[in-house]
Length: 133
Image (cartoon, rainbow, N blue to C red):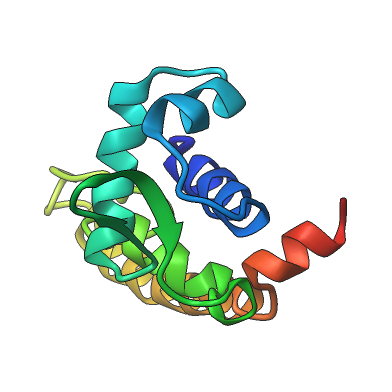
């Protein structure tokens, strides 16, 4: 699993604690990364309506209060192109009893786990993260 989810939480938490708009370079310095990665993740966050940037004013702000940004919703946004939390291997042997059935069996199990992950994460908000500082 990549770190985009954790970095997204970091970005949103940083924005929630700042009074003014924050530049991608400022965010990158906090993450100890580069501004290009930050801008890429911020595009996801903008598309998900978690953040916005204003024309003529450099930087990002939260679009909604930190108390309303649920981590499960963020998880679904970041991993929207991913079928499950874990990949199911392909090209199994259709002549093997296990090979023929494993993908379907794992798909059902992974769907349950995906829902459990989102439900558990939705207990927490960006404000919950800040409250743990």
